[in-house]
Amino acid sequence: MLYFRITVATQVLLHVLFEHAAGYALFAVKEVEEIGMLLPQVEESVLNIGKLNNILKLAAFFPFKSAQAALENINAVSEGVVHADLKLFLETNLPPGGKKKKVLLGVSDTKIGAALQEEIGVSIQTGGVVAELMRGIRVHFHSLVKGLTDQAASKAQLGLGHSYSRAKVKFNVNRADNMIIQSIALLDQLDKDINTFSMRVREWYGYHFPELIKIVSDNTTYCRLARLIGNRKELSEESLATLEEVVMDSAKAQAILDASRSSMGMDISPIDLINIESFSSRVVSLAEYRLELQEYLRSKMGQVAPNLAALIGEVVGARLISHAGSLTNLAKYPASTVQILGAEKALFRALKTRGNTPKYGLIFHSTFIGRAAAKNKGRISRYLANKCTIASRIDCFSEVPTSVFGDKLRDQVEERLSFYETGETPRKNLDVMKEAVIEAGEVAAEIKRKLDKKEKKRKKREKRKLEALADAEDDDGVNAETNGEQEHEETEADVVVKKKKKKHAEEEMTIENGTEMKKKKKRSEVVEAELVEEPPQPEKKKKKHKSGNS
Image 1 (cartoon, rainbow, N blue to C red):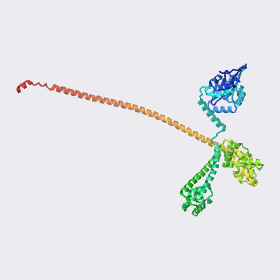
Image 2: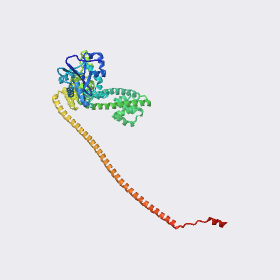
Image 3: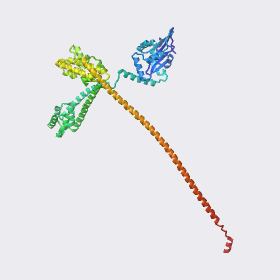
Image 4: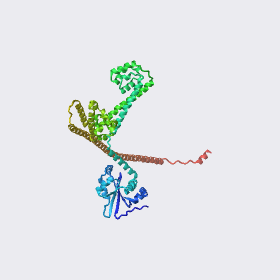
C-alpha cells in the first residue's frame, strides 16, 4: 500500500479539472506527494481504479445540456477562452483559499490554465502530478462518475469529435470545392482516354475504310460513323440522310458515300465488325459522359466560385483551384504566385540557370492572353492574375455567391486589352468597384428575398400538412363518436325489438298453452262421458257353455 502525504506547514488543496465530452468534472486529490508520483510503481498504480479512488474523489460534475453547448465549451477550451459555464462551475465548487489553505487547480493545457488564473485568480498547476492524475482519470472516467457508462461516454466523445471537426473545417455541402478538384481531374483523364481510344478506332476501322479518316477529322464523329456504317459495301443512297444527321454536312455525307464505293480497304469479317462497333459505342458513350461532366463542372463552379468562373472561365478556374488545393488556399496566394501557378518547373529551372522566369502558368489557357500581342502577354498576364486573386477572395469569403464582381473584373481586363491595342484609357478601379458593390447588394437582396419566399412557402406547406393531419384526426374522432352513438342507438333499438319479440313470443306461448289446456279439458270431458254411457258387460259362464256342448 502506497501512502501520499504533504510535509509542508500550509495545507495545499489540489483539485484537478477534467474536460470530457459529457461535461466538466472537478476531482479533489486526497493526499499526494510530488516526488512519489514520479516513481514507476506509482505511475502503474494510477491505472488501477481501486488505488486511484484512494488518491482522489469526484467533487463535482457539470453535464452539458446539449450537443451545441458541448461544442461551444470545447471550442472555448481549445482556443484558451474561459466559457461562462466553466467559470460558474469553478466558482461554485472550488473551495476558497486562505492563509492556512492554498488552493491549487490542476489543468492539462497551459493556455486554458493561464486564462483561468487571470479570470478566477486561482493558482494553476500543469504537468508532473497533474499529468499522471489526468492519465488515470481519462482511463477510468466512466467509473468515477456515477450514472455514466462506458458506452454513453464513447458516444458522447464520438459525436462531439465529429461536430468539432466539422466546425473546424467549416464544412459546407453546397460550397465544397473538393467536387471541383475531382471533376477537373476526371475531365482531364477523360480527354486523354477518349483521344487514345479514338486513335485505336481509327487504326482498327482504317483497315476496312481508310478514306474516312481524311474526310472526318473529329474523333467522336468518326466513332459514330464507324458504328453507323459498319460494312462500307452496304452503304447506299438510302443511308445518305442518316449520314447527314451525324456529320451535319450534306457535302461530307456525299463524299463518304462516294469514297465507300471506290475504297481500297480490305474486306472485314462480321465478327470483327461487331467488335469495332462495340468499341466505338464505348468511346461515344465516354464522349457523351464528358459533356455531362463538363456541364456539372460549370454548375458547380457557378455555386462555389462564380466570380472566378465569370472572369477566367470554368475550366481554367477549376484548374487553378485544383492546383492550389482548395479555394481558400487560392485566396491566400498573392497575385505573383497565381500568375506562375502551374509553371513551377520552368520557374525553378530559370532560377537555377539564371535565365528568364516564366510569365504565366495555368492562366495562359485563358482567352485574354491568346488575344494579346506578343509584347503585351506578360503585362496582361500580370493584370489578369491580379484580378483572379480578387475574384477568388470574394468567392471564398462572401456569404451570398454572385457573379457581379466577376463580370466587372472581366470588363476591366477587356478594357486593359483595348488600352494596349488602341490606347483608350480604361475606367478607374475605384469607380468600377463602387458600381459592382451596388449591383452585388441588389442581387444579394434579391437572392435573399427569393430564399425567404421559398422558406415561407415551405413553412406554409408544412402548416397546411399539420392542419390537414389535425383535421383528419378530428374527423376520425367525430366519426368514431357518431358511430358509437349510432351503435348505441342501434343497440337500444335492438333491445326494444328483442323485448317486443320476447313479449310477443310469450303471448303466443300463453295462447297456445290456453288452447292446449282447453283441448285437453274437452278431451277429458269426452272420455268421462263415454265412460258414463257404456254399461258394464256381463261375464259369460263357461261351465254352462261347456255343459251345453257336451
